[in-house]
Image (cartoon, rainbow, N blue to C red; front, side, top):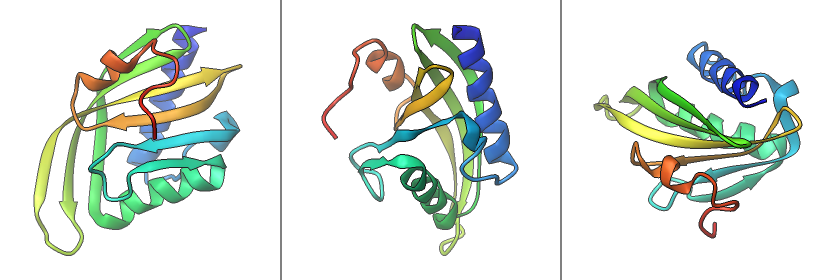
Length: 136
């Protein structure tokens, strides 16, 4: 199952690279949680497919382009740690940024039940296996 979850994460990043939001909806649990870290433009947790879609839409709304490519995907039980290299350009400012961040994808029965991203490339790995990350 863990390799299947890694493949599902690949499918999401590939869909996002094509600006397909929210990605393969059939692989999203109806009660999914999307968690933005403290310091994000809209920090906190969004729930449900509509909340997931809204949160992703805000990312693409703020940036003229945002491209993220997974550099490492690691299965940890029912979770997948993703280290992502990104490049983006601010829609209003034209400022270009690039760097690495991470995300922790949690699965149940082959569907994403939680997506939590982090500012640092090692943060998701530290959160993996804790079963319910920090309060959001």
